[in-house]
Length: 86
Image (cartoon, rainbow, N blue to C red; front, side):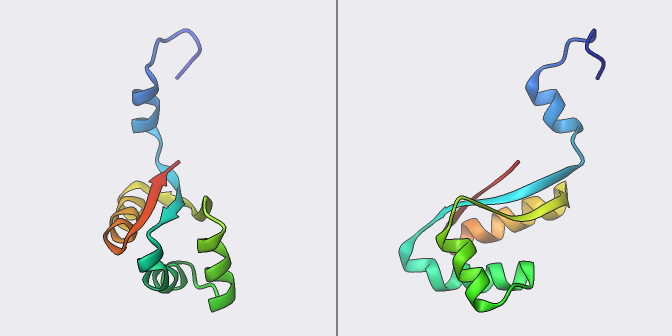
């Protein structure tokens, strides 16, 4: 959008095509499941995935299409993690 056209922040987000998936936290009981899912999603090794989860908030994937990003967030949420799109 040009600086002269009024847009709300919500409209700007809807126009965005690619998102970063950010892990913001997790349930300690679900930590192992979350680490396994992070490994599967990112291709990281066990140590790196564990560090990414324990270091939350951390960006897990960058520049992901909206549909795929929403699926990742949904899956992580189902496992007991807190994730969001940026």
